[in-house]
Image 1 (tube, rainbow over the protein chains, first blue to last red):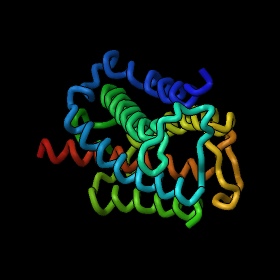
Image 2: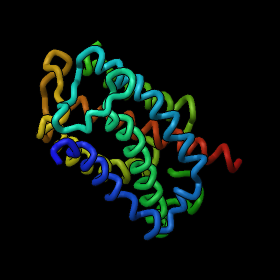
Image 3: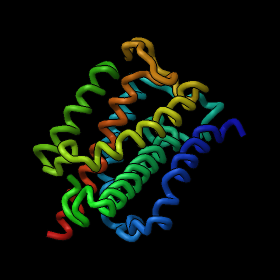
Image 4: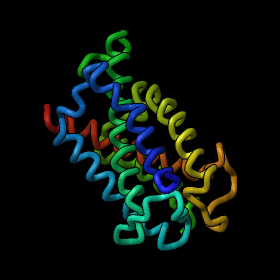
Length: 114
Length: 99
């Protein structure tokens, strides 16, 4: 169970944001190409940073609190998932805020997010 | 480079991407700044658990040593860069699809 600690935190993050999609009918997951492209591009860049920082010893992971699955670059599986989960949660949160603000007339509906 | 230096560079790069490269200009608008406090609250919670339990350990030589909810302040800069980059690309992609 202890090895699932990091995974559980990631699942908690995903759960905290994923409900926004059906409840507010955000339509973020429907735009899967845009979401996949965004997450893929961002994850690729930040994973390079992560692998470099791990190689430099800037941070490390407790093997007793992670799954133990190591990807190339001594990257724990959870770190890859982190860079998928956090961007998806961010987009869901952003679109939820944009929708709520547009309903209140604070920003133009469907317009620029300013 | 230390994590401190890399995190500062990450923030600058994300700002440049948002303002000059993709021109999503999220940091000039209200939606981003209304979203970001929510993101930070969840970051402090989840990151605090990871750093507090010791799931992630930081080399003391790579950080300045100031911590917020167990996690080094550098993580806040890292998170800001990650979230701003994500939303900047997301908005840019949306505009590209619907000119």
